[in-house]
Image 1: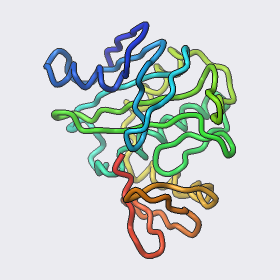
Image 2 (image 1 turned 120 degrees about the vertical axis):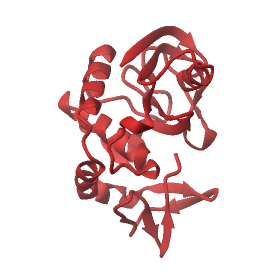
Image 3 (image 1 turned 60 degrees about the vertical axis):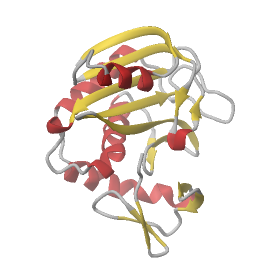
Image 4 (image 1 turned 180 degrees about the horizontal axis):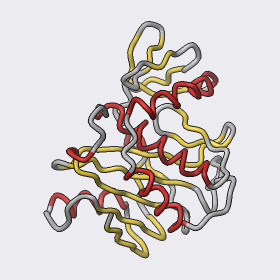
Length: 211
């Protein structure tokens, strides 16, 4: 994975997306910034950028993804591998469906995925140094570069979707007191069931992450 380090950028995801569209880089490729001024979160919300937190976007060619990974499950897949990577450093982080990182009941970051040309583009924001108001900071101290290197090493193992899903399903109960969003509505995950394709069923309705 070739990595471009920047001092500051509006959004690592927007920056990498343009590089790919203009044919200036090819996957796999990553962009990391010390600070981010206009980060993008889920549902086009902004992600507050505090200097020295993790601002990372990376792309992987679709043909290089695990064969059983469906694109609607991509956010869960890449988020869960990052969660496991953080656990290797001693963190108690958990993954709220489908792409938010939490310490206990407070959010510390998230991931979004998009398809750009023939690649999947993943954008990660994680409070590893400092947390904005109403958010939480990662519960362990680590070096950004070491985390990124370990994460990409774990991704290169190409765990199957089935392997990742089997572990995430055991932890899904943590979602019961939380909410997700769909069709511009806030939806309780109490009583929700996790399906094998990564979707959830709430009150008989199937909801996909679409992130």
